[in-house]
Length: 341
Ligand SMILES: Cc1ncc(COP(=O)(O)O)c(C=O)c1O
Image (cartoon, rainbow, N blue to C red; front, side, top):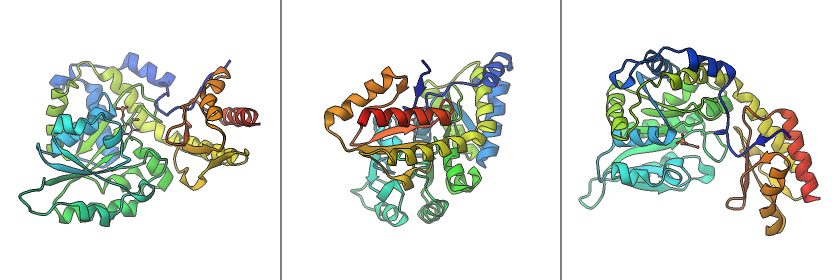
């Protein structure tokens, strides 16, 4: 039985070309700056993301956290969406590692609003923490992309207040595909960006942080502090190079499959999917059936070869990825029809 995994795009596996590159790449001790493949990845990532420099990290979480550590001092405050990965899914690391306060804002559909952010910036007051950073995310984990115009407004407003902007761009190439722009059009409006190589881009591991040289130098030291200084990391950077150079070209397939899945779901009685919210590779839907039926779905699908997450907050999520073909989506839709009939 063929297994299909729609739990996330983190389940993608390295391509044959990536495995070959891992075996053949030159390596060195990256803590000494001696790994030619890591150096090439960092130069390439900086160029593609439109920044002066970049730094390779083992994970997206470490990448975001090293960036926040580099931008803030203890007791500062960062502004972040209440739906952001940095706030929701990084184990409270901002408090633990940076000693910073997280000022969370709730945005309609998760799309950051410039006025709301500006109103949350602290003035000079002996009682208040200092606002040191604005954190954005693009694409959003709710499947939407933040329009470039929002990014521009926020960046210009932040500049007027002298506050830097960091973007969790774990899926920034998905955002670029959804918005039909080069990724630089988005990243020009942030001071630092983290970008995951290991999600839809299929590398086995890794993220890159890009920004100005001084920021990246600070982040390099913070990465060491976090235990992220790696030695012969070229074997990990080699698939990362293929991921960042080649794999953004295939993301539109995942997006088309996601829309196809959303359309099919809406034809099944009892399922409701907000189609306009499906802008990248993520499909969220509601099943209007008793709790017992909803709870039983993941294990029923698993017995038939499909790995999917349980319902969370009233919604199911399926994520299309490089391991999922158009025919696989037809299989998923047929099975859902059968289960709910
Ligand atoms: C939006 C976003 N940011 C950051 C991360 C963290 O990446 P990692 O799992 O590599 O730590 C994820 C992971 O799913 C994510 O979805």
